[in-house]
Image 1 (tube, one colour):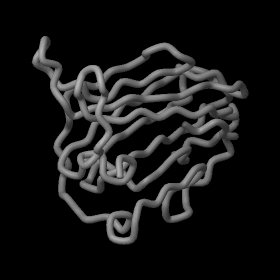
Image 2 (cartoon, helix red, strand yellow):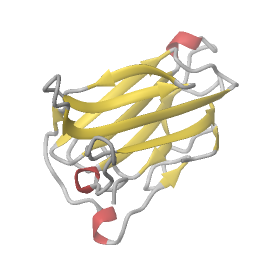
Image 3 (cartoon, one colour):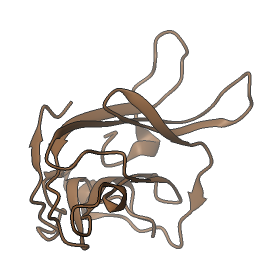
Image 4 (tube, helix red, strand yellow):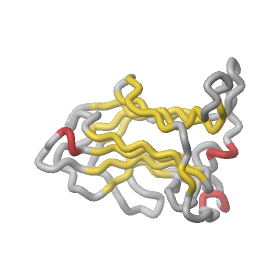
Length: 168
């Protein structure tokens, strides 16, 4: 449920009582990817109203480390959180990319926990506030059970040249 419908995620932290989820994977992203976006993980999530998650990469130009991008998105349908990282991964090396997400509010700071992204064990970005989606649609994954693709988009497009391992 969490991957396809994050807003309905029943996972709760025993210590804090907050809802949410986390995910990580190892990715070896080649330096010679072209500039089109390709998918490492996709459950259908997007910024136009489809709930789910998407982790995408966009290739570097001439192997330049600072132009290689990783995008992590979590969408509840009406709202989405997106972090875009540039130059945080090392091309042609194994990188651990992970995130944790919660729609709940921090009782002390009175702000949403949101989406925190990690690369190789270090927190590199944190998007606390959500962005409203343009529309809300019911994705196919909610009609026929949760679907997930590793290495491409749900519809089979956006195949990546990256190697993936240890999805958790």
